[in-house]
Image (cartoon, rainbow, N blue to C red):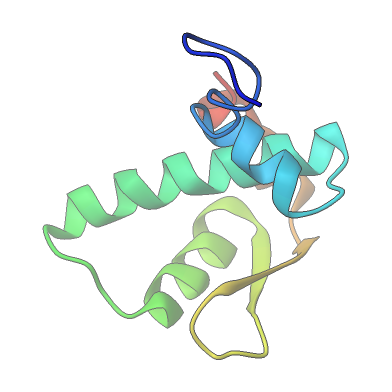
Amino acid sequence: MHSSGPNLVNNLYLKSEDRLNTISNLSYDIAVVWHCIRRCRRDFEATVNSPLPIEEFINWLAITWGIRVYMAPDGYNLSLKFDIIADDKYTMFILKYAK
């Protein structure tokens, strides 16, 4: 039985961090990177003034910030897998987007 008012069940999905923690067993470090990628994507879409195909973002992320992300098998979402392909760019990415 759920009580009224704020409780853990009612607030489970209020923050994106909490939502990510419920869908998989992400480590804290990986969750931080995905929060940064989400913030970065918002910035990217704001600069191009429209949502572009996800492949454009994937390419831009690799070139600009040194992170290669992959599509999930469903062909629509991003996979949780990522690779750091340029350490210096990745460091700047984390400094900029980890708030």
